Image (cartoon, rainbow, N blue to C red; front, side):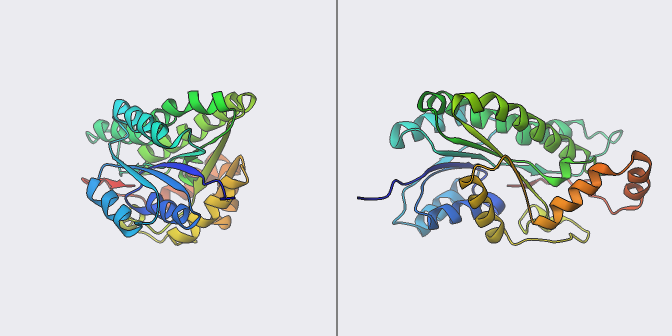
Length: 261
């Protein structure tokens, strides 16, 4: 008897963490639905894996209608998803008082509202089947507000709280919710950071550990493990101490381009 193949839907799958997760699930024999803005990158990925079942959906996660259409097509072709990973993310340096309001809105639209829009069209089929896992990519950067990265920190803090509420809402309906909070992972996003990144982790190693955590349906996981400790310590610091340390720390500069995944 053939083993049942996982059906996995991933946003932000053209680069960085999303691409590494797609590669990891190909190794695990999953049926994939991949979303990203870069159609050429998605097509190239599918071409590299001709023996795998890969459906690609070029779309921007800010377009809820396009995401809903991609979800409908995936479910029609493959059935209810087992795992939906809302990974698409954007990081931009932004400062209040410098005309960056559009940047703040864009980062929130992609990182937070894009996650909600990703999950929305899958919930009905998952709850009907009373199974499935919704996975959101948060960040250690959401633990405290990082100077220069207020837009990103705020969006990832919102993501963490949203996923916590969603986990409690979905549990009685048979659906699991997993929060993954990366530290620094080597990717196109982190390549633009002009400062030292402690415990920098390769994307393929991160993806393997994340897929294992999702399989175990953990509630919350941070990789690399050292950043879990760092995040806990950051959370416990008194505000006066945190302010003094953060004021002297290097910060993300304002950037005219997006660091996206």
